[in-house]
Image 1 (cartoon, rainbow, N blue to C red):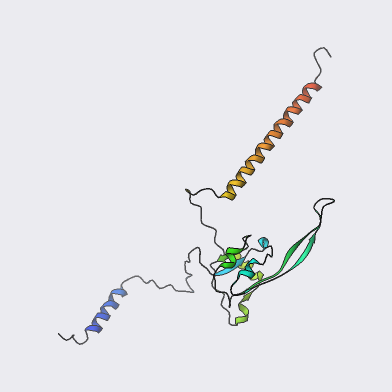
Image 2 (tube, rainbow, N blue to C red):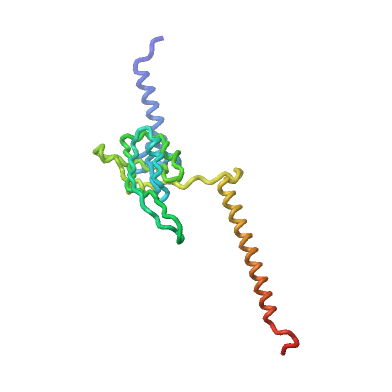
Length: 200
């Protein structure tokens, strides 16, 4: 049986009429900001205080889009007779986002947690050269990094936290023992200093 002329148009209009009564799901960006997942890969934020200029991120980057400059400073000895130490001071930390492929290797290899994913994604520029962002801009994005998710209540305690807790408990017990010893010594001295019954 040949199709009825105009049946396709009628079916299309029926779909249109059905969807007209439903609630719209179109996100009106940029008037309405999207709700992004917490692990969204937007841009990379820099926590400068944790950076030791070890260069691991720049060496492991497959695109060579991380630029780091530093210099060495001499730190005076902490105690008399001690030895002076030298430390690296960060001068420049920049990422060229026109080359970055958002693989996250730099974040994974950083041993001091200086790099983090930020869900920020509105950083378009009219000039490709302006996509190289320096450490000031990376520092601003650091404050948009979401807090880490809460730990599972049934999970094991992390080894680092367990070791830190044991060390704190050991230190507290040692301090309590020293305080008790000092209190006993003070009481003994006080009892010796008191005059006897026959010495009045």
